[in-house]
Length: 202
Image 1 (cartoon, rainbow, N blue to C red):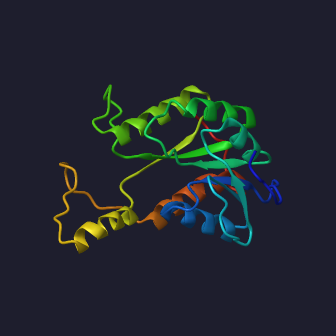
Image 2 (cartoon, rainbow, N blue to C red):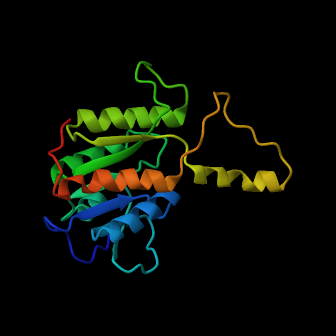
């Protein structure tokens, strides 16, 4: 079972579970949620270092018991699915249904809603997760982002070695600053705790 400590949310101070919290986007989301006064809990596979105002739940999204414990007292979840297979997410969806938090899922603009199958395995997982979360009855808020700017750092070793780096054979597009995506994520997570917020619709 994960180690979960600290306060939970209230109608005026929501409690948010963040997955992928140590990634380039996740860190920005956590910082913004803290700045807005939210209680933040992060689900991580390994214990992180101390961070004021943040709870750490050690566990894995594919472990129903870990997810169940991490969801206690949670109002909303920021979900990044880390695997290239959506099948293990069926158990995750069941835990989310039982806990009934709002779900904000980070997906991809590369999804072709008219296609039976996507032309890229990563995009296919995003499409499968979209369908799974909706069919489970979660009514998630799905944010479709283009490539995050920070992902380009993965090319640094090749560039330093003098290699030529080529992207996929598709039309050129600008990358997206993860700070802008984080702003959208936090707005979606907190909208129902804003005085002008409205009820979610599917």
